Amino acid sequence: MGSTSDKAKGHANQAVGKAKRGVGKAVGNDRLQAEGGAQEAKGKVQKAVGDVKSAAKDATNKAAAAINKKL
Figure 1 (cartoon, one colour):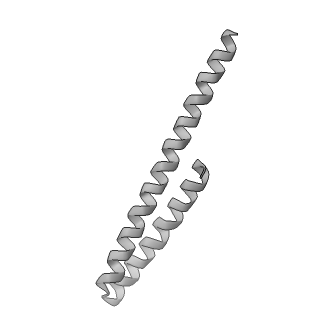
Figure 2: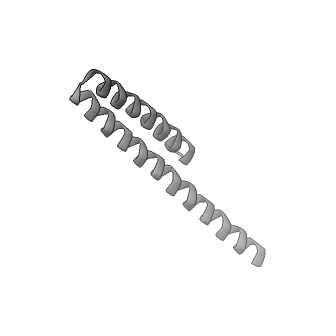
């Protein structure tokens, strides 16, 4: 999975998790609140993975550009 895909899925999971948590809180459903919190956390991790992949790709591209300048 690419960095953009990870970030998009992360944002989606965060949004759905936040909504679940809010609905769970509104109706007094502790299980739904917990599921929402877990899904929101999963989204944060997915987004972080996407950020790391993006940073690694940028660093690799910068290193390749520096090498190509020296050639």
